[in-house]
Length: 112
Length: 109
Image 1 (cartoon, chains in turn blue, cyan):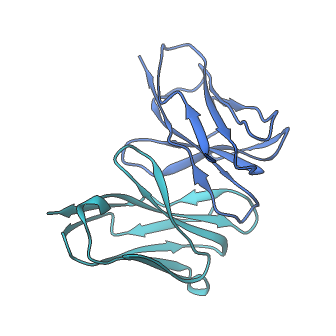
Image 2 (cartoon, each protein chain N blue to C red; image 1 turned 45 degrees about the vertical axis):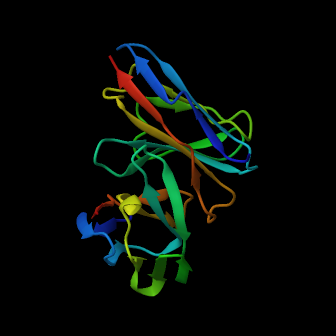
Image 3 (cartoon, each protein chain N blue to C red; image 1 turned 60 degrees about the horizontal axis):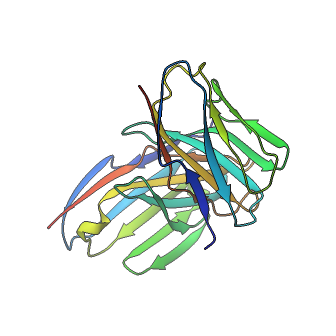
């Protein structure tokens, strides 16, 4: 089936550790995005990438890093510099700059 | 940056009732989407509607781009319609999808 796969579904991290969230798509989409959602809030953009080996910061990029070495993959690393990383993280992809975006099922990250 | 405002923030309906959700945006956009977030957090695509009117079963949406608003209509609501409805817009000059704060819909049986 075509779609966007995020893993893991749930992730627990100790303070001071870096963790990497996986996002893979087999839709042949050019653009990929990472969003963060806090309880009762909307989605805020962390990073996005329009082509391989290129990405741009979104509104809340501090404490996060990404890579885009393959068209189908856009992993997000939550570093120890992120002050409040506990949140729901959603990955999305789309074809062109104005095309419809589709989302994965999300990863819930909890710092323990 | 662009502002996306959704109203009402909360809505409680009796099963079978109709409702209208509104999305206002402060700048010209190339893309507007409506999503339904289910209790598990999954964002379900409802409409991709930069302009005009579309219908899908009991749901329909209208975007008037020149007046910078979009409406989502839900008719004969069901308990499975409960959840959060988000409006999101894509700016002319970038590829970023900017979200509103959402409308929380509760449908009672």
